[in-house]
Image (cartoon, rainbow over all chains, first blue to last red; front, side):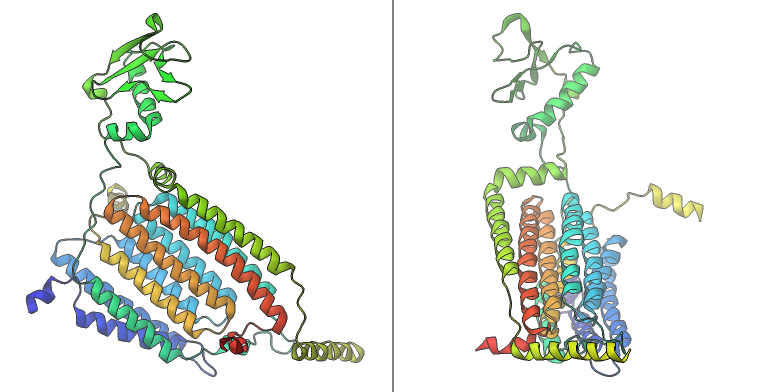
Length: 342
Length: 118
């Protein structure tokens, strides 16, 4: 039994204690009427996060792994900002804390070598979606009354059923992490996308650029020559099996049967790009366009529908209900009286 | 001090992950999802409730990217592009609805619409 526990990446007891601590911290940090022990709750939740980090780190040292410090910085930043987001009573601050979460998780994306998605996340989420949220928060908030500028709306000032909801959420977390920490799945060391032969079939232009640069440098090709390419189909004449390329001086090349315009050049073995690495953007682009082309179609239709829907909804004329009308009338009347007095 | 800085500069900068396990990332993702769920259930402000769904989207995206890295393919990242699209569409629709509801009741309280549960 003990050896089975020692094999796990974190002691289960420690995990559950951290979950309970975190739950109590979140409950305390929830906004409520009167004095709320928010700071204490935040500290408690941070302590829970620290416990988990401690458990994970001690395991890692035992297995001679030194986890990247960046992971812990970004992970704790993301979770801390997320906690602050769900507990902050003011919507504007909640949205700003969510931007912090986004930035921290884009740091995690960078650690996972998903560079394109990291920057797309910042541009699209933090730059576009969250700004839309901020606009709506500004649009849909009642103006503060004169006597108390910091007054919160009642629905912001107190949470609904904090204890039950936190219990449910942390039960989910405990169950999921129990399954999660059954064993460790170490991430493989990245070895690039494919060999150059595989890249040749997908990204011939990349191999062509690489080869023609090195062939020009080694003067196996004269400056006015280039690697032959059939313009209409875009096929490059690179024979990966026999390690040779067709070199041409003309513009359109149909094939090796064009006599004096073309000649085969044998590529020396050390010049052949054996371990070519596709960049992240190339990989994502190829995957999106070649393997999942339907994704773009569906995404386009969804965005079109959202655009139409938002337009229809925004154009609709809304009548205030009786109660709200009366409230607004009272508000206006008070303003008039105030102006008269003033 | 200078030596320490130089040593840092010479180290392999962001250690490329062989040392971290998939579980680390999945834990962050799970905790983020749980936080989003708790926020969705406890907060009464309609806008913050939708922000919490965005937090849950974010958690799903992190898990997808981590799994894609684990399998060394790009499917996870393609799906995150899709998630970003859905999040943008959802933000547009949901916020239009929120503005509509706000104009009708002059309040963002979700409890005011409790009659919708039938």
